[in-house]
Image 1 (cartoon, rainbow, N blue to C red):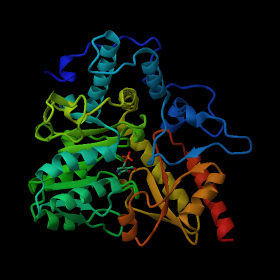
Image 2: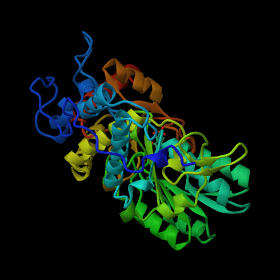
Image 3: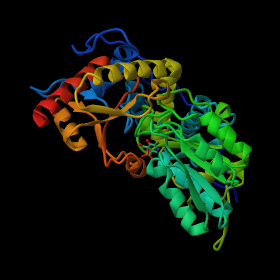
Length: 447
Ligand SMILES: Cc1ncc(COP(=O)(O)O)c(C=O)c1O
């Protein structure tokens, strides 16, 4: 018996959709008054319907500064989802009829788009997951439980998102492996001396975020990977905050795994990516069992499909994968260098403006060249949740809390910060609205 997937190894190309799918940004004339022409953000903003809604009466225009939590979606992605459901939906890899073959072709085309976006040599190395969290759990379970032994060392950093801590805690508890942590320097960068000390203990795996979601620090991922590989470790890069904002190429990074989330990279929720080096994925057993991931099933045991099907049990998020493909095509059309440059200009502008607001302390790297478009700060005497609530009264959306990085916040003797984060569609006037809101916070709380 072959698996359902094996029956259709080479899907036919998809038909041209009835409605053209927008893959590059468009300029429309009815830009809101607060959006001046000029920057990348100004130019592509009309592509994002949610950012062009009229605010409720009496409320200022939305300043959306929470892209690190989840990005907004361009029309190209919304159209890809709608067109798929209107013209193509059927279950994939198993239908003997045209509609299913077309859906399969689009799903697999999205996989190829992902591979191209991250410089992966082979689309079979791209596993669709639900999000970054699931990608890391997949490695912790499918690789970790099989390969880790008591006393084996896994290196993480104190700056990790809970998604890159808790799965390793669980697998360490089960296997007897130990966790070691790279420390943080006072300026919010990683202490690479402590990395070297840990690497001397021949770790099995080093897993770290490329960009910190809490402080915006861009870690020297290629350098960390080079040192880790020289010590014989596998390397997992949590690309949740890098893949959407700076060019990420898995070959240039030299890592073994990269995980990221569709919803942070202008794509839909419910879809993510785990990229893994082919020979390592081939050697891993399944993560979840069920349909689509098998080769042969007996009553008491089974054998597994090849990768990536082995790791995609059950009916996958088909429309979402296709939407992710549209998002990456859109971003590639802009160019990640251009996105990075735009967000860096916004960062410098924000740092400059925030420096003028009394009581505001910006956390994170002292060198902005090492920081992505994420600005975490505190306001003297005001709880970050109160800051965010007052900002919301001015329709400024920011995140307040521990940012799923409780250990990192503890390192800084804090329980929470307020965080503003940018995307390719962010405009300077949104940062101006943030600054106005912070002056109001001061007026209310600090007289
Ligand atoms: C650095 C980092 N890693 C992992 C995650 C988890 O992403 P998700 O919730 O999409 O799985 C996030 C989400 O904010 C993140 O910022």
